Every structure is written in C-alpha cells, then in structure tokens.
Length: 573
Image (spheres, rainbow, N blue to C red):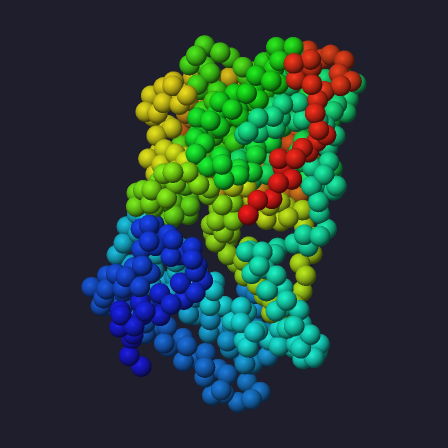
C-alpha cells in the first residue's frame, strides 16, 4: 500500500476541516487567521518528505498497526482473544465491545495517533505550528465514529428499541438548534434569570447606556465600611457569579459582611456598535467605582475583576492612580490576563491579517455577536462542549439535563465591534498593556505598575482561556503586594467552587519567584474551595464594622428596579 501524496492528503484534510468549522472557518480563513487547511497540511507533508526516513517510518508503522488490528478481528480463530476495548470515554458503553464497533473505535484511535504524530513532525514554527495542531485536533474530534449514526452502536440500538422514535426526536432537536443557531447544552426550560438564577436580593442603584449597577441587600447585622465592587467579563452575563444560592459567589460575599455591588454590562444593541474600550472604562468601571464609593459615604472600595472584567478594572485603576486618585483599598483578579505573552490556543485565531480584517469590517460600527465568541471558546474543547451534545441530542434524541453553568454559557452578550478590535489588537496581537506608557487610555498614559494596592490573583490550573502561568506572569506587572493562589479545574469551575460542595483543591504560596513552576513547587496544596482563603484575605481590607443599611442607594442614587435588573435579561440575536 503506497503512502498518500501531499496533494491527496491535503485535499482530504481540507474537506473535513471545512465541514467542521463551516462559516467560521471561511471567515477566519478569508481574514488570514487560519490559512487554507489544504495548503497548511501540504506544507506539513512536504516538510516531512524532506526527512524521508521519518516519513517512511511513521507511515510504515501506521499501516503495520492497522493491518495487525484487522488481522486480530478477521484473521484469527473466532474464539481467539480480541484487542481490549478502548478506554476512551466515548467508547465505554457495552455496545462498543461488539467486534465490528470495537474494530472501528480502535482503528480510529490509531488514525488519530498517526495524525497527531504527522502534525508534531511538521517543519513549522510558532503560530503556524499552533494552527496546524489546532486544525488537526478539530479533524480528529470530528472523525470519531461516535459522531455518526451509522457507526455509533449506541444510537443504532436505541433507534431499533424505540422503532426509530429516538431518531425522530433527534431530527427535531437538530431542527430546533439550527433555528436557534447553536447546540443546546442544557434543558433551557429549567432556568430563568430572576426566578432560579441571579436571585440574590438587591436593587439597581445606577444605570447608563453601558451598565446597570446592582447593590445587594445585607445578610448580616453589621457590614464592613468598605464595599466590594465586582466587575464581571463584558463578553458574558454577570450571573456566573450569582447562579443559584448554593453556588453563588455573590451570596457568599454578602454573607461575609460585605456590601456588594455588581456591575451588570449591557448586552449591546446595534446602535452601540461604535463604543470604544475607553467608553467601557469611563462609563463602566470608573462610574461604578464612583457610585459605590458615594453610596458608602466616600469610602474606598475593594475591587474584584473576573477575566476580561479584571483587565478592564486594572486598566481603569491604572488611569485613576496616574491622575492621583486612589479609589480601591485592594484588588482581586480572577483568571485575568494583563501580560498576553502566552494566550494558549486562543492565539490561533489572532494575527495581523485577522485583526486588520475585523477592523475593516467594524470601521463604521457593528457588533461582534456573542454566538461567534461562544463557538470560538467551544472549539477549544470540542470533545467536551460540542460533540457530546451532537451525539446525545441528535443521534440519540435525548434532552440534555439541566445544568445552570451551561445555561449561562449559552446566554452570551454582544460587544461593540470597535471596542473588540481595540482589545484584541492592543492585547492578544501586540501585548502592549505590559509596556509602561505604550498605550494611552482615557487621555492618560497607561502604567500597570501604578496599580499599587494589595492584590489577590487567582488562576485555574486547567484554564484553556487564561493559562495559569500567564496569569502568574501578569501579577508581576502590578506595583503592590501580591498574593497568588492557584485553583484546580478550569476557567469557570475553578472559580465557581463553593465551600459546602467540598470539591477540588487549591495551592497557596507566600513568595513569588520569577518562574511560575518554581512557585508551584513550593506552594502548599489545600483541599476544598479557595473562597474561605480569599474571604480571610479580603477581611483585612474591609475597614471598621458598622450597622448594615436598611435600604440600598442614597439620595443621589436612589434604588430602581429590583435585581437582577433588565440588562441581564436581554437576549439579543
């Protein structure tokens, strides 16, 4: 059997890549962010062809293993032992142990390993190598026999047992998702914002075109004099921090005696498409800082930012410190990047050609749809966030179980195109936040070293959006005393980990050596949630205790509609 030519291999690769990514691949490819997959794979194979020994060894081993696998099923006696069932979770059901389907699964896994080794051996460097590996993983995930009705024995057996009703339900699920424009990951009828999500009592005490500011009602007789202002990411809804009472970070903070304010970003309508990064700083973060301080008698606040909310918050504080203002007694950053030296696999999507194309697209305004961002993030973990739902919803006709975190994940927010382009150019592409004076924001040269209040930095060890070593390096840009904590799990599950659940662990270290791995080697591992550790740290900056106010707001900022407010309920296309 002869090896495929580079052209043949590349053509097959391109077909599968386009099938998987569809319009997204076309948009990214036309912008230059993801080169044509056929050309990229051709470069890969041609590069390996220069090392004929390696190319021959890799392919010979692959064909030998496939032949041995085939002979194990059809060439041996019927009672001879067959290869062990794959341990991959996609093939653990008893149906996959039947010889034909066991062979399909094992053959697929051999092919997947061959593709991975082919990509790893490519003579490519830097971002080109990252793009190749990303495309390779996307194709491997898409090609799984579990993803097709005629090669998934679980789906076949269920269809037979239900006289085809499972397939009928699956087609209805598929049609509904096509109309919705996204894969359903949870039973969305089980949740409603304001009914069983985002139910911590409070009221809106300020609003403008960019945000509503919520003040939560106290749960203790006395409260710290300094309030806690939370700045969530603007690319998602704030209620990831206020899901249900048992896993609400907001509820937990209020129980600790803090007067908590939450900035609820607006889901931007088309007329806000020209808003800028500076607008988000001035009309969002800085305005929220001023209002929270005014309501609490002019006191400094303790400020917390999550993900890009933390990036916005750090920038706003740097601008204010440069102006001689000192609004925050402490800063907490949860899974936040300030130094974008290593952005993980998200760097696959951002290069000069892509950014320039989006800048041209949004030159006259327009919105970056939350749906596009959601697909981007989901593609980084396709075997967790795409294909399991394709199999269960469409091939088996199941309705996914209710899961509050996944409901939130599907409830995205639109961003102004102008603001988005500024953000990705200044951070992901050019990484200029880390350079003192390299950027000007709100008419002020930016220097993160001016952010000199004590800071608590939390990263998540398995975070695929903000790599934990990048968050560690970002802390070094700030000028104040730093406490770094590493949580187990990923970008969301590492943060939303209530103590009562008794799950996961975290690492705490007292010193901050230059290298992240050196910090981890000396850090203390502790079981359970990081929330109590943070609460003890924050209490040191709360100030004196005073009797809790019986009403939110003040004369200048009277309470309006009840929490969670109307901005967070808006679901725009």
